[in-house]
Structures are given as C-alpha cells and as structure tokens.
Amino acid sequence: MDLRHLSDEEKIVRITKQFLQARITRLEQYDSPIDFLTFFDPDSPQFRHLQYMADRIELEAGLRQRNEARTMKSEHRVKHHMVGINGDYAEIVLLEEYEYVLQPVPEFKTSETTRYSVALSRVNGTWLLSDITTDSDFDDAFRDTDVDVKTFLDFDQAEQVSATPAEYMGPDMTGAPQLCETYDIRTAVAYAEKYALSYNPLFFSYKGLGGDCQNFASQCVWAGLGGKNTAEAIDLKLPPMVRTGPRAWYQNNTTDHDPFGRWIAVQPFADYIFSSQPGSPGPVGTVTDGLANAATGDMIQLSDGNKWFHTYFVVAHTGAPGKRTTRDLWVSAHTTDRNRQWLATLITSALPVRTIHIVGGVNDACSAPPAAPEDTDAS
Image (cartoon, rainbow, N blue to C red; front, side, top):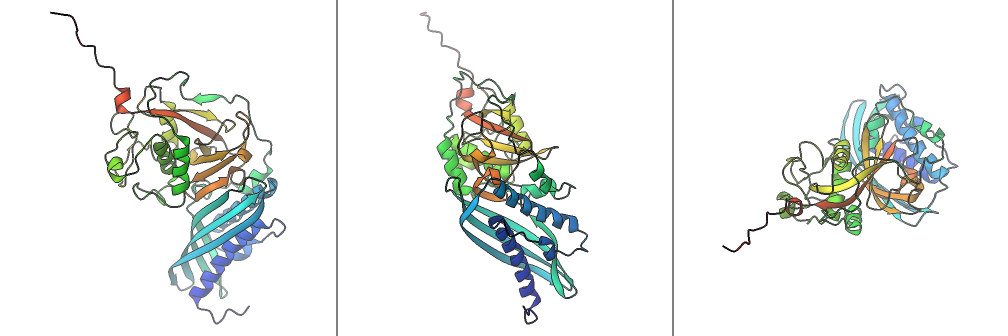
C-alpha cells in the first residue's frame, strides 16, 4: 500500500494501531501466528523490552489455546493522543479497550483497558516501534528483567493443589464473637465490577504511580465491610476504616494516605491481615499459600519469585473448595484495568500465588474494652 501521501502523524497512528490489532488477532486466531518483530526497530537500545512485549502477547495467546478458549464475540477500540514528533523520533500514547466473550467458560463479558506509551524511530523512511511500556503490573515486575515470559508456557501444566493448603499467615478464626462488621461478598463484588474500569473519584488513584491494584482491592474490602461511598464518610475515615493507632487502615481522595501502605501496597496489606486477630480493629482474615480454596470475595496476590507485586479481586468462582485452579476463578483488577477476566488466561502455576480471605471486621466501638460495671450496692 502506498503510504507516501500520509503525514508522519498519520503513519505513526496507523502502525501503532496495526500493532494492537495484530495483538487481538493473535489472541483470537491461534492458527494465525504473527511476527511482531516486523513492527520493531531491531537497532533500538530497548529491543529486549520490545521482545518482552511480544512474549507477553504470545503467553496470553498460548494460555487461551492451552485452555481451549474460543472467542465468541469481541469489540476492540483504540484511542490515541500524539505526544510529539522530533525529527526521526516520535512518541504516542494509546488507550486500548477490549471486550470479549470466551467459551466454553461461563459467558461473562470480559473487559480490559490498557494504556500504552510508545516510542518510534524512523528507519530508512519507515516508522518502527522502538520502545513500549504499559500500565500493567506485569511490566513493573518483568519488563526490565531477563525473563522470557514464554517459558511460563513450558512449565508443568498440572496445577499444584491440595485439599488442605497450608495456612502460613493469619490467626485461627473459629468462634470469633468480636467480629462486629460483616463482610458482604455481594456488595464487595458489585463495587469491584462498578469500578474496575471507571475509577471511584472519591479515592486517590495510584495509576501510573506504582500501580493501583491493592488500592482497588482494599476499596472492594472496604465496601464489603459496609463502607459508605460518600465524600464525607471517606474524608472523615468513618468505619470500617480505622483512622488512628497501630491498626490504622484508610484512604481518601488526597495523597494523605496511610504512611505504611497497608491500604495501597501488596505486601503491607498482606502483613496487615497476617497480624489481624478476631478483636483487632479493621478487616480480619487469613492468608494461605496457593489458590485451591480461593473464592468469590477473596484476593489473589502474585509474586515474581522475589517480591509480591500484584493483587486480583475474585468476582466469581466454580469448582470445589480445596481443589480450585486458575480455571475456576474470574478476577477484576487495576492496573491493567480488568473486569471478569478468566484467571487461566492471565497466569500459570509457574508464578507463586497466595489467597487473602476476609472473614469480617472490627470497628472502634466493638473493639473497645468493656466498661467497668457500675457499683450498685445500696448505701
């Protein structure tokens, strides 16, 4: 096709959109492998990062194929914003919206929104991609490492499950009368599905500031424990938030957040639940290895082998307790923003995972020590 009549901006928009369309084609048509390297500048100093991006696409396509998932219907939209062109160098930001339905899994409509920042260089008169970053937590964990994510597909496909996965964090929750806040799973899931793609404006967003995944999951827990979604309740840090003390756990629409990150960061939140007791203020729960007992309303955290870097919120499950695998779980998350995505198309058992289960909560009133009895002796 003769593209000489197009402006540089039009050529840049065309090639970046062609790259993203090729990604969707690869995900949906397993018999149509695509050489993504044809989009890339092989002389770019960021070439290994470009290879990482191609590997990520191949991994997701491979997971779909491994799980025999077929795309029944889909819609793909890309919006762009030009940052600028300077000679033979250009930058562009794109927002990709992808909605689809897979079979044979339950017919959930899955939605994803991903932000791409793309750098391009002009090579022999042709614009080629010279670097790509996304807002995905996987980028933060793997982009600058030497891990070839395609090797995850070669990992033993058998899920490591146990009828009684070992609990390595959290107290014994049997018979805990001190829990005075009920964790309403339906409310938590409804919140997750409402705000997975459209952020709650009453909370500060950490999208682009290290990731918003745990901030979003904490909001879901807060909603399930009865949090009132009003500016007044959030700014005053009303229960189920805990506004002061060693168990402080709160967030609002400014950067005045919990300095220990218990609300917003993956590992500190797990530590917070680990240290919870039936009478502790705030959310109370357990943390277990694996996801064999993961269920709707739980959180699943991922590790890259060195640190825990991402949190998903479970919005649906199938299968028997103690035997669940990635094939039994559907998750929502920030960032990349996802709603009702089948976990089997996102991760493999090569990644260490753990499950956080919330059993309820305790507010200031019910965690206060009982008042001393009044002296009723007659004088």
